Every structure is written in structure tokens, then in C-alpha cells.
Amino acid sequence: MNDGKKTTYPGILRVGEGEYQVRVTYQFPEGGQRERKLRVKGTLIEAVRAREDEREKMRVEAEREAKQIGYGMDPKLAGKETLSVYSRRWLTHLVRTGRNRVHVVKQHTHILTNFILPELGDMKVEALTRRDLVVWMEELGDKRIKTKDGDRPYAKQTLTGVWATFRTMLHDALVLCDLKDDPTQGLRFRVRGLEPVEKDVLTKEELAKVLTATEHESPDMRAMIWVGFTTGMRFGELSALQWSDIDFERGLIHVRKSQVKGVVGPTKTSSRRTVPLHPVVAGILTAHKAWQEMNLVRGRETGFLFLSELGGLRFSNVLTKPLKNCVVRAGIGDKKVTSHTMRRTFNNLARQAAGDIVARSMTGHTTMEMTEHYSHVTLEEKNKAVAKALGLPEMTT
Image (cartoon, rainbow, N blue to C red; front, side, top):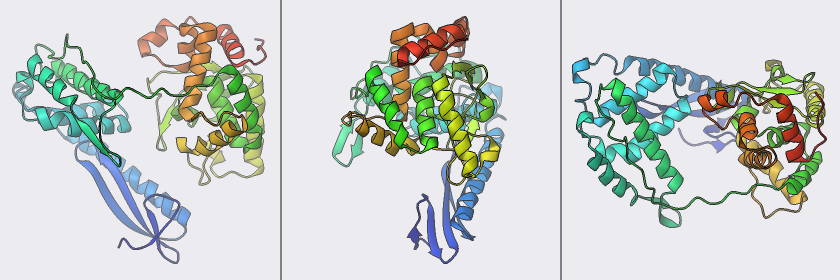
């Protein structure tokens, strides 16, 4: 059943003329990762579509299961359950209320399984003390991860994420378990682990060279790079843009949604914002749209700006090679530039040119409350910040 020739698509093997074996996996919040195998007769494109259809079915099943688990508990027993039992009820709560998207719930599940429940899972929620958490923190700092080069400590960023999940879960227990006190209250998590690697950002001069080098890339990749560097969008937001989000007349881009692995939903902070569309970028987008129509790009009827060969949404690795090529042409090949470098670079240059408030209002790198607090930032201020930060002609409004 596993014999077959690999294709360019993960999980899809060619097992005969016009026949494919498709492996579909999905992370169920309440039951770990599950796998299904299909046999598809037809073309490779039909096999890919069958894989995505089956994955969508599994997503619907996961949501249905989440709604059925854990909500029939006697309120008198809440808090007396073990942390393992409560964690499943908490994950159900996150899915049911829509607080977290599926991929975030998957991250919580991974953290619980690997970092929290092995040591604390058998303890009753109401019996957890600050001393228990301090001991757990100390042990957490000693955990190591196996790599091809041997064991090494976890990165500080990873362990900070573990603490954030645990703290949120126990804070929610004040309501879900009717706890009188949150045991994490007043505790400071002192992280032990590997220091984060300093990631590259581009200077204004380096950025100008990289953007010039995009002339050698295809119109869609050139447009994606220009929009990414001149707006500071997260890749999920950038790849979920539709032409209805682009206001050419007023020179605006509306950031309303994001996508993760082809599933479109709200932005990371569930907020919306508006960023300036510089005339240079508008011209590049206009050329990109004409290129889509001329080449009859699959899926263009959906209105998405950036489409794969199959008409679906793009993943971040699509920019790996184009960005590397542009960096080499720009003469800064020693720098590692990824899709997230575009956001970091914009944020850094905009902050230097206009300060934190204007920069945050454009990048959306805030909570909902902070976004509201900074809502007095005008479009004129944003326009000046983009032009000044990136060395482009100033826009007129």
C-alpha cells in the first residue's frame, strides 16, 4: 500500500497510470493527529483536490467532536477533575467559542502533551499550588530536545510559549472550574534555554536594492514581495488579500483576513486595519492583475491576488527562492531573508521614521485594545511614514 513514486505534493504517491495513493492527516484537538488513506483515479490535480476535500471533512468532524465533549459535566465536579481532564474541556471551550483558530489549538495541544501534562496531568486543578508550578518551572528549564547533532536545550522562545499556554488555561479555570484563585497570579516565569538567534533585517539602502532586483522575478512574485515589504503584513494576511481589498482610487489596502494552510479566517488579533498603497506598488499590482488575466491563471475568479498553479492560496515557502535570488542580485547574499523578514524590516524602518504608534497602527502588532487606543493615527501620517521609511516619493491625498 505504501509502494509508489513520490510526486511534488507531500502525502501523494503515484501507484499506477492515472492512479494515486493519498495520505491525509489532521490534528484533532481532542484526539491527537489522525490519518486516512485514499485511492484516487484520475490526474494529479484531482488527487490534490481529493486530499484537500478530505482534510476539510476531517476539520468539520473535529469541530463537531469538540462541541460534544466536556460540556455535560456536573458543575460540582469542576475543579476536582485532573488537569488532563480539564485540559480537554479547555480545548473544547477554545474551539466552541472560536477564541483560537484550528492551528493555534493544535499548538496548545502539542504544548500540553509534551511539556505540561507529563508532570502535572494527574493533579487536581483545585489542588495546584504556586509551589507545584515553581517546581515544574525548574524541571521545564532542564528539558532537552533531540536533534541530528545531539541533545540541546529548548529555545527560550519555545519555553515562553509553554508558560503562556499554561497561564491562559489556568486563568480560564477561574470561570470554567469556578476556582477562587489563579495559581499563576503573581508568578514570574524565568526562562532558561537557548537565547534566540538574532534575525536579519534590511537597511533602507539594502531594501532599495532588493526591490530593484525583483524586476527579474515573475509578476506575481514581484508584486507579493513589494506589497510585503511596503506594508509589513504577516504572510497569512498578505496571501489572503483579494482585489476587493485594494482601493486603487484612494490608495489604500484593507487588511481584513488571514489564511493558514489554505483556511481563510480573521487576522491574528481578529482586528482590521488599513495601510497605504503607494503609487509605485499600485502600478506593480496593476501589472500583476493584467498578467493574471493574460495567462488565464487558475482560480482568478475567486478574486485572490496570489494564487498557486492549482488555483489555491500560497504558502510562505513560495517566496524562499525569489527572495534568495533578489538578495544575491542585491549583493547582500550573506543575509537570510524570509517572508517574515519583510515584516520585521518594515516594522523597524517605519518605527525609526514615525515612531511606535504609527508603526503599530500599520503592522497590527497590537492587541485589540491597543489598536483602538492608536486609532487616532491618520492616513496622512501613515502615508508620510511609508514614503519616509522606504525612501519612496511622498504620496498626495
